[in-house]
Image (tube, rainbow over all chains, first blue to last red; front, side, top):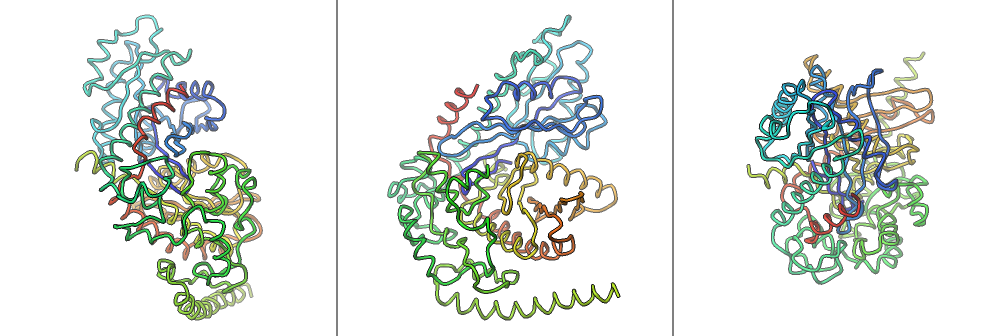
Length: 376
Length: 166
């Protein structure tokens, strides 16, 4: 399942190496880990047995870099190949966006290759997915083994779907990156095609403001709403019109400071307070900082990524120290959605906060009393 | 269901406003529970958002392992006739972690230490869970009805990025 996170400007996709035991799936991942540029690769995590057989999965994130303003990451997994690990194999397959099937070219492994491919079909079917619709690349590994089966035979055995296939010798690195590149291309192309087909109507307002992903026109409607908060939003029922253009974000912060509290009624944690950009990036993840700060950090470090990303909702997350006490636990959800009209929300919210606070305090008191009594 | 429809149904798109709402809930939870870190992870292991203290090790790896851990115990639960174990707790010497299902597609991981205790974390996590679920339900409904919002030049940019990396 592809996850598109506009707040972090990140796309996550899941790629799985599948195949029979000992076919070289983990080796593929190790080679990618060894040879990918250091800034792009994450840690290689393995859950394996003492005998180095994969028990659950191997995992490595691979950062493709910024694609059209979005940091694109592949989360790469291998499955345990042994037949008796099918339950864990199936779990790893959940929500995957593309599969590299690593087949073993040795004659003795022909049957296990076929069995594993069949198992892949079955496991995908259990998640309601058809292997024919899934981005699939087949890698014929161990081509250097004496008596390796011919590629034609392997194609006849395994490639009934007409998937692109590559020859490889994973332990020397040969064929590893072409295989991965081919799958990455298919996954991203799928995402892109689906994007252009899936976006409803292009928004006429899109060109009115700089878009975060350097789009000019023909941007899908929802994207335009996100990218150009100050522009007209004909279908924006889910995204309230932004009151402040992005470039005025700094001044809007000053406004927000005096605006009524619309959101959290608690004292923010120290690390929830807006921090300098350098502090945000030093945490290694933009999610640690408030969205406004994070976006500013991206703007500084990511260049073209986006002038228009600091939309109005920044004020929602802006913490206001020492306001409505500890009543956040009972804050009504609706108040949050009606953030635009300011004063009425505050009045109504305060009443509810007070009542909720009393109820919550009573509940906590009761629990504490019960706990103390139980100790006695 | 066509291929495109399937993709749209599978995909989750988070906009900044939604992430801010989620962050706000997590901040409130952290404040009340005194836990160190709260994170939302989808069941495939992709991090949605994290609040609180940063984690020394790779956040991506922690997310993947939390999702894997939860998935494994879900299979265990099924063998025992349960749909899943909705809450997991791993206790360490100084740090512990609670993992809780939030709706059908998301998990909430909470890391805490001796400044608080499991009861307090669990108590406030229940309420936070309910609120976060409401937001995620909205995200899911909206995700299925809207385009991914990616730029039109995404495909070309992706090819260029791949050529550069490989």
